[in-house]
Length: 123
Image 1 (tube, rainbow, N blue to C red):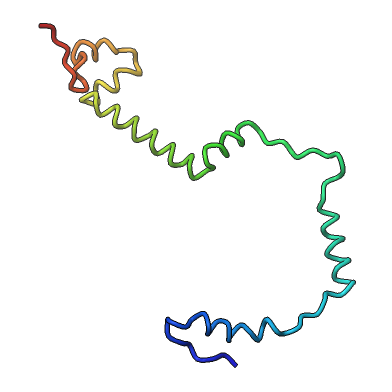
Image 2 (cartoon, rainbow, N blue to C red):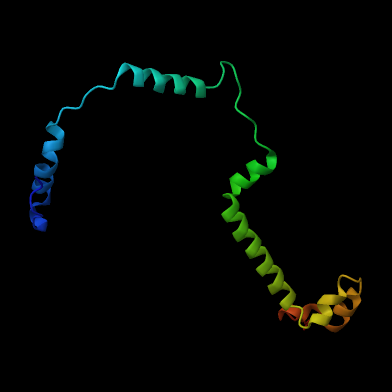
């Protein structure tokens, strides 16, 4: 029979009383048949003597080193955000679309070095 729940001051005594019966109850030993089946299953799962662990590919090792798929998702989101922020510094989307077509002279002539707000002046 489980005793009534005590106040917070004597929780340890209540646990000792409630679980004391379980500690005094004798537990029988497992049968020989059960032990032989468990050990047989364990031996079948063991690798052969002298065997080597399976090798993992370099991509899987790199992925595991980064922290797995959740970390790679965060890394991809951060890279995409950085790319979008970098394109936002160009000013207009017309300048951004000129780069893939080789018209970077348009960017250099119009924007110069003040694309990020950095003006170089001598004086």
